[in-house]
Amino acid sequence: MKPLLKELRVLGRGGFRRLGYAVWGSPRANRTVICLHGVSRNGRDFDILATALAEQGARVVVPDLPGRGRSEWLASAAHYTDLAYAHAMSTLIARLEVEEVDWVGTSLGGHIGMLLAAEQATPVRRLVLNDFGARISAAALRRIGSYLGKRWRFGSIDEVEKHIREIHAPFGKLTDEQWRHLAQHSVVPDTGGGFRFHFDPGIGMRFAIPIFIDVVLWHLWEKIECPVLIIRGADSDLLSARTVREMLGRGPAAKAGRVSSIEFADCGHAPALMDDTQVAAIKGFLFPDLPDRPAGRSRASRQPAKTAP
Image 1 (spheres, rainbow, N blue to C red):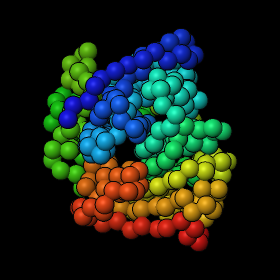
Image 2 (image 1 turned 90 degrees about the vertical axis):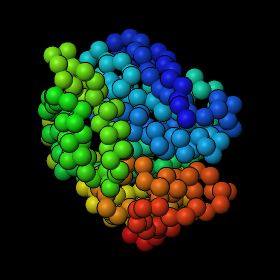
Image 3 (image 1 turned 180 degrees about the vertical axis):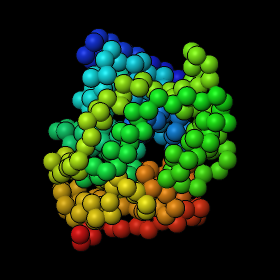
C-alpha cells in the first residue's frame, strides 16, 4: 500500500507555510484517523500502523508537524509553539471535511491531541496517547532538549542507522528492516555532503532553558471526555506508571469508564508502534467491534478504567 502525498497552506506567525501530509486508504472511508509524531520525528514513523488501520477500512492521515519532514520550516524558531501546532492540525481537519477524527499521538503528538480533545465541541472521537500524559518528567525533557541542541551530521545511511539504533533504543526491539526504514526517513542530504536530520534545528529552541519542574497538564486531562487509550513503555522516563494510574481514576473520561491503559515491556519512550501487539492494541481500541487477534512479539499488561492510584 502506498500513501497519497498531499499538502496545504497553513496561516501562522510569519505568513502561510506548507504543511505536508500523507493519506492512506480510501478518501471515501467512514472513519478518519490522524497519526501525529513526536518532537524530532516525522510522519513516516507511522507507515506500518497506517497501513494496518487503512486495511480495516479507515482513511489514515499522517501529517508532518511544521519544521519536520515535508512541512516547511517556520520563519523563526520562536514560532514553534504548541498553539501553532494545534492551529495547523485544526486547519488540516477542516481540509478533511469530516465531523470527527480518531487521534493517535506519540509524545508531542499526544500533547497536541490532548489540546484538541480538551476543547469544547472537539472533533476528536477517540484518543490514543503513546507515552504521553497529564504529568511529564522534567528530567526526560532535559534529556530531549540536550539531544535537540546538537547539530548531527552523518557520512552515510549506515552511520544514521547506527545512531538511530543507539539513541532510539527505547523504541523497542525492532527488526533490521524497521530500523533501516527509520534511518532512511530520518535524514536528508546535507548541502556540505553527507546527511542531516530532516527537521529544522530551530524546533529545539523551546528547550534552550533547562526545565527543572515536571510539566503538569491536569487542566487539559480534566476537560477530556472522549475514550482514551494510554500506551506506556515499561521503561519510559517521560511518563511514569504513577501518572498513568492517576489518569485512570481522575477526570470525566475516567469517571465515565472511558479510559484504559496498556504497558509494553522491553521499550521506553516511546513505543515505536511497529510491533504486531502494539498495532493490535490500537486497532482493538479504535475498532472495538473487530474480532480479537493473536498476540504479537511484545509482552503487554492492561489496566482497566478506574484503577486506584
